[in-house]
Length: 328
Image (tube, rainbow, N blue to C red; front, side, top):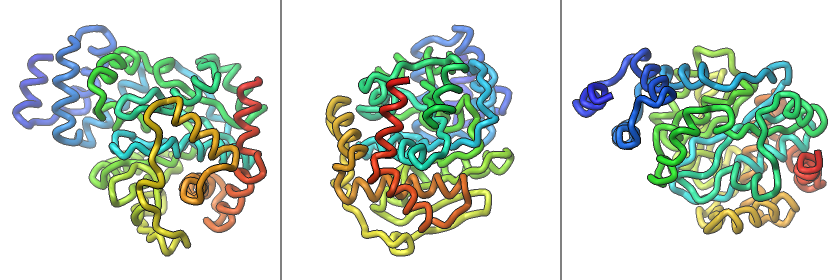
């Protein structure tokens, strides 16, 4: 590892195989805590190359606890995190809204490391029991339309580096990799990325897969559609630029999307929105993200899918998904 670190410090890059070997050595316990910190610090000073991303991703997926949910026509809505914007949990709320329309959602997530509250923090506080048992997850998808894959249960390497990520408290290489690692391999993915260069890299990676995807980036640095700025979208049909006006929305001020100071406050915001008590800005943002995810699944227009998402939230169907999930 010392040789690799020296190589990276000279501003050189890794081959796909070298990147894979780093992950395997992490898994085998051959890399020290201090060396992990050094590595992620280097990648905070530059984005990984496409070859490095693919190498890291392939190794992590090869070491992943296997699970087969591929017979479900499902979607995941996920962001890199680490944008430093401290928003409430937009993508997780959008997942429940999508499930409330009758679609299947396989959500992959983790505790917050670069933010105060990740999707795992919210669901854990609400009483959801994380599991890696395929039969239980399949039952949740069948009966409820939603299941949740807590990353450390499926990715041993992510479990190994969790203390390091917690200690650092900033975005790391693993934020970049997270959206690429859903063990359920959903057929559809709405991926949020916090910078344009990385969005283009994701686009290159996904062009060589069979996934149906849309990679979204709000141009003011959010890894979700926030309606605080215009949006760049890369998908199977190419690149598209959406203005806020084209989407028929008003521009939202960032302070309207602020999250809480801790998991308790963020869970309260989450439940307020899911219970139909969210502000206009909060509702519009989660509905817009849900709309884009639905359009990946069913190919209907954004207008039609917005109405489906709106009904899911306003009728209580989205909240009922959470209720049924916790009761199952």
